[in-house]
Length: 114
Length: 110
Figure 1 (cartoon, rainbow over the protein chains, first blue to last red):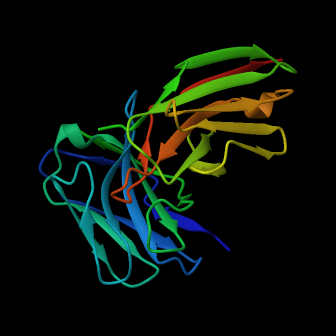
Figure 2 (figure 1 turned 90 degrees about the horizontal axis):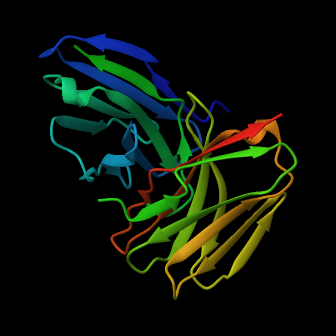
């Protein structure tokens, strides 16, 4: 099993450009999450999806949109990138519908917005 | 806002020594988890301790939880170079979202 996969691994954008970060899991998990990690800040939850067909805002949702395409895939879209969105983005999944269960993380996407 | 805070921010130890790091949190929890992150990689789950548990072991890891003090500790015994990583505690405030601290960076010197 690949676990949680993310594409791309690295991306450089100019201010105002848009892009979609892709995430897929092959563990048949119900819940999926998008986090961003900034130096000294730990991980902050952007959006999550407790089950297929549902999405909810996390701590820092502004500037992002998500789509739970099916049970396997959860994408994160930046419509108009800003330098403040330079960060490392992690996707995670967990088996149940409650977010406090053990989460499995992807390898991350490093995004630089110029 | 971050629910958990790790202490110290950074720790440097000799191979073979024990490493201890602490996590304090603000509100009541259902469980507390510890994760490890190697440089440039995603987080890996280490151990979960429930609010009704006081101590839990997994290999060379020992986790304690004191709900009266709203704190937890992670002890790594007989550290190895491969233990060099950042360690994060994660708590679940009652709105069912995991909240991560800023982490403790551990460096194990050969």
